Image (cartoon, rainbow, N blue to C red; front, side, top):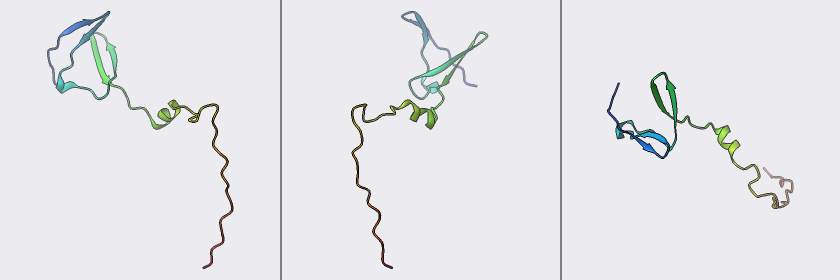
Length: 80
């Protein structure tokens, strides 16, 4: 297990710490859990495809716009 001495500092009303490069996490957010005197910092879990699609707007054209009517004739017969 890697250990490294880090500095704590104040950022407005929050306490913060500088994460050394070798401990960098992906993304811009993390999850912090307190377990007794220990703080556990973990990367945020990736959003599932269903959650991602659900977070998008369900009406991409807006309330005033609709898809235009498109002629849909039956397919032409093929000669073999």
